[in-house]
Length: 272
Image 1 (cartoon, helix red, strand yellow):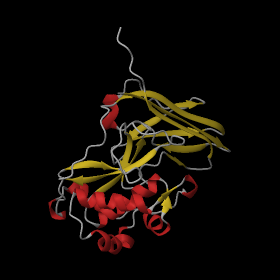
Image 2: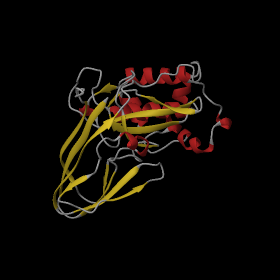
Image 3: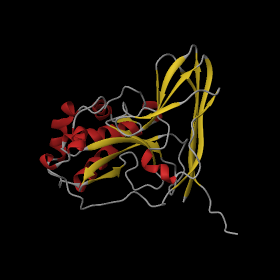
Image 4: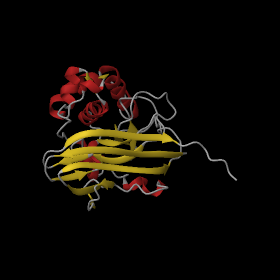
């Protein structure tokens, strides 16, 4: 399948402000791009890019005073298959995990394993280790948190989402990630595009958050918000939590004026 994807984000800046942006398709999906995902700026600015420590593409700009529009519009190919389910994927012992995944067992800014460890063990210690344990965590988080954009706030942590029982997709992901880490399952936070493909269209499109766990020697995608295999995930970035993959960090005042995201499957084109 082919997915039409992109965004338009508009800021009003009272004064020049440096910005660090994470809006490019992840390197693992760049071979699927049919058209470039160039970051466009209006007014035209110098855009400098680099790879961060997690392998994500970051863009740096110096926004001038006034209105700045950031946008991209591209087509990406996808196999059209839903998320893979591997119900027998085993959980490795901590001492057998590769060095590079150990960081995803530790607490982080939004995933307070220290505050949630006893809670996690009290609820999930009797579940079967591996895929069934992760699915039990996803089921619990999915049922515990009430979704609503009115509940969103940039400072909400996994522990606060647990206590309040409400939030948006990043809060589902943070709480599930934290519980997995508490149960000695490496888990990392993901952000990207997830359009309403293969499911009813609901509300306005936004960037989405899900997470990945390390089971059976590889990473697997889970989605506590939707709690079902989905089609057409387009990864932008991975990290410990939302701190590592924020779509924009502004080093000064930048007022968000408009925010639009699109991701939908294109109809098949008849062959001549």
